[in-house]
Length: 318
Image (cartoon, rainbow, N blue to C red):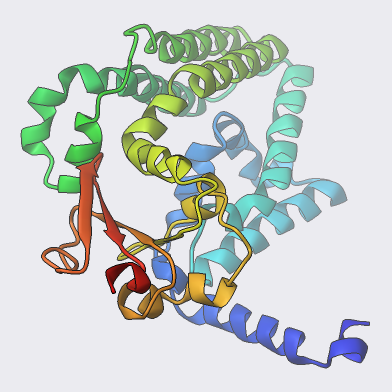
């Protein structure tokens, strides 16, 4: 229907974009060949580790398992070949991976067999690694003065220096995850696989909820809190807002960018150098000095790793 109504342009653009994704790193998303294997192994813990045992030939004995194994390898090999690598590209592998982990544990439990020592070792190592990171990440702010001399990125340093109200108790979310890993590891050793999975599922869910409530908003305040606050202060004003030197969707959400004059709002050359008909607010990172010193730009403030400029409407200058 789309082709009949509007012609083949959309299909043509779609195919050309897929070829571009396959052949070159679009939007700088170029990663090493092993990227998706690392993403799936770490990002899908613990099922990724528990599924490792299912890759032995003797466990691929029925048609459904063979199809799931085939689906997993097709996804992983295809997106390893694709030049543009983004985290969610390999997400189709999550379904067969969860199936393989479940059937492997089910067979082990029915047979009364223990998990291999190497598999339990990998499980404990990755689990404790994650737990340690989740525990110490909220403590970084309290040791920032000691860490900053070792950070070479001025933008990261400025974000870390932004005053954020950390309570000091946020690390408990990470300890909850560590407790879940250790407890489930003990149940795995006792061949109580259902209890092990239940404990890990519960601790993971509670850790994620605790992190979303206590940690993520504060990390967001460090990374783009100043940007968000500035954009929200401009809501409802008849102005243009743009970023320079980096791409961000923040103006669309936090400024609630109007739909009027979409061509002008998207034209950076016009906003930076043209005869603008309303004030223009321009946001850059502090690492970008391109606009520093321009006589037609007023530096409003520098905060949280960003510089905020104002360019007046041309009629206001006459």
